[in-house]
Length: 104
Image (cartoon, rainbow, N blue to C red; front, side, top):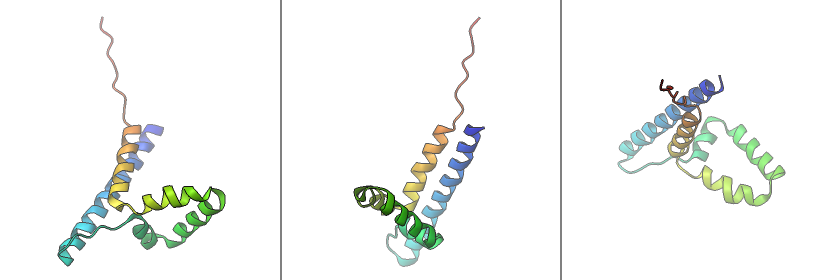
């Protein structure tokens, strides 16, 4: 059951990353240059309240260096790259293990 949930979530995240890649590609064609949207920009567009809540909780309950040195750089990465890597990791965690046939 857990493997199914991990695979489903991984597929959903990977598909969203692919959509983000296509959106960046379309914007790049429209402006005749390379456009890469960061995870922070995408998150702020989709749900600015949750981004603010995560920032408030992280700054309030975690040491300051975790927000500035670990979370902010990840938020600056392209959304399609972060989503793609996360989706692949979830798909790998949920993959079916090969069943070994016993030789008689």
